[in-house]
Length: 238
Image 1 (tube, rainbow, N blue to C red):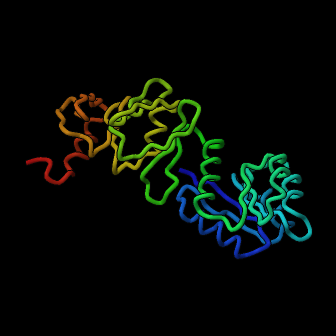
Image 2 (cartoon, rainbow, N blue to C red):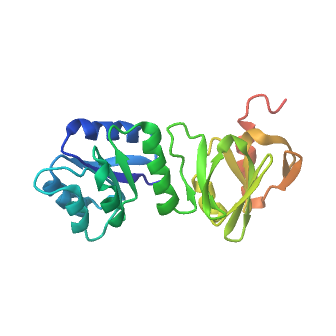
Image 3 (cartoon, helix red, strand yellow):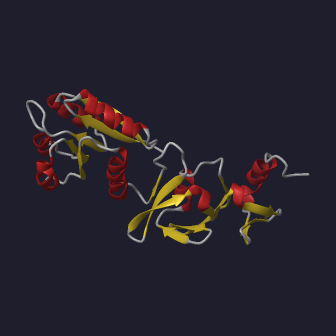
């Protein structure tokens, strides 16, 4: 999946470094640019068109509020500042969040999740370096789904039904797009309408696989690839 490009504007190099360190823990994000000079930053933001900008307020020549107001095609803005008094003005400029320095990672992550909720399509790639979860939109909220909990996914027209051990989640995204965001070493598509978790397969025949007691058909077009993958499982065939 294409990474979310971030730009950092702060006249303090140490403050930029802190945000870079926080972003380095999130594999879905990358720093496409940074600047300690707000005037230069304005030109770079217009050129690079990042999806997310971290903006300091108190800077020489032009402050962050003035810089935000200058932008024509505004990216999502997260304000980073040592001063609390700009909060109201920041939200009036439609800033996504307002982070007060020093910025702990837990609070930073809350701002990132707010960005994910508002700016990503229904299914998003994992945000952690360990791809243990995926975020999906359902019931007017963004839900974190642990990949290890997924038994199988069923495509229903333009929707996908994610089946977990004790829960089912329906999200408005096609099964083809959903499959693109899953790690292929953990999931396999067995039918045009079904994806199964490889480690949840308890049995299979030439025609279907069994997952948690549910028999799922193997589509003709997927059969050869399925058996090639399964033959690679050590100890499976005796």
